[in-house]
Length: 261
Ligand code: NDP
Image 1 (cartoon, rainbow, N blue to C red):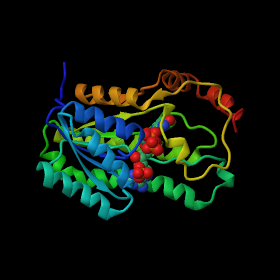
Image 2 (tube, protein in one colour):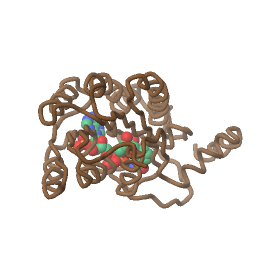
Image 3 (cartoon, helix red, strand yellow):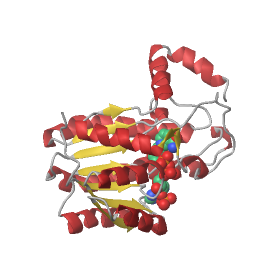
Image 4 (cartoon, rainbow, N blue to C red):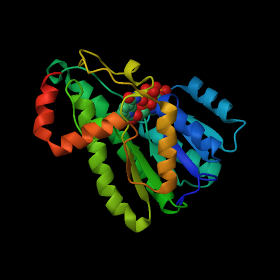
């Protein structure tokens, strides 16, 4: 049974200009949600808004960089101004960087954490007063398989997603008294612009061939999990197996990972 109605829900989603965020925004608008969509590329946000125009829901946009406090405040203000509040915050925006730790400079880890972790934490802090007054409120944090098992050539990214995982577990317990659910979505390889938008690529592992899933599939699973009030989903079957094997035998997984470094 659904714990949460999508129709009429007021949603703030970051990273809505492409990939999983864009697909999730459209899936939610189709279901009748009222959204504030945030990203830096204004032209993409305009297209998104136009695409949603014939749908049951509605999309308002805020263009900006979520690592900037002013952008985060504008996003919260937009939810309050257009919809009178907020029910669901989806922290989806994220960036990666690829290559060995020893070849990276200190700026790389800082930028990855600014986008993937600090912006997510600070937007959650800012959204909390509205969420407390929301209807069946929820925070959705988009992590990664790499937030469960770190891999070589992605040390900064893996660490940032482990941080998201830890933060989410802690606030899930803390926010229970406000009746705010916390869902962590951990995608595996998904067909998006993510791998073209990495901050830096100084090397990458030669993974065995694997088939990515579509951003629409991840979005569909995310929205279903929001509806059902789930705490954690891994919308990628091979990723689920990886997490399971890692839990069963971390030593074996460590040996396997050395091959790809
Ligand atoms: P995309 O690159 O397609 O989307 C990333 C989104 O984040 C874009 O809308 C981008 O918009 C936005 N974004 C990035 N930096 C900022 C910023 N500083 N301020 C505002 N918006 C920003 O990738 P995905 O859809 O794949 O990524 C979505 C989430 O899924 C991320 O958290 C990622 O880590 C996670 N993920 C993805 C996987 C994959 O295989 N694709 C696997 C596991 C997790 P703009 O450039 O316009 O600002």
